[in-house]
Image 1 (cartoon, rainbow, N blue to C red):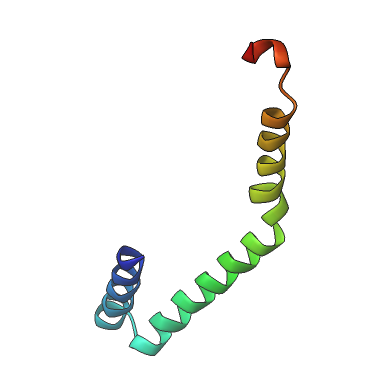
Image 2: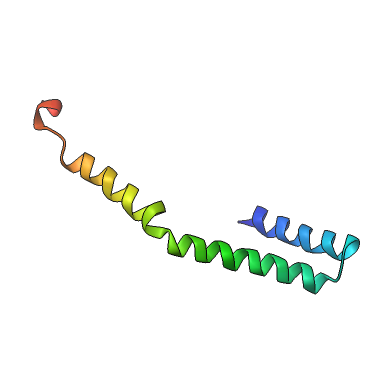
Length: 68
């Protein structure tokens, strides 16, 4: 988490020194995080729920012969 924070700040300061104002760099980073959050929210079933349910189903529905 700290690495992500430092990378974000590094991008903002780099953007401010080389390309434009710091507020614009922070706006770009904020927009990126919002888009990433929306993507994860929209695809949450595909990324998290479905694989979790699949693995739990495999574990819970194993044949008893394998354990004996």
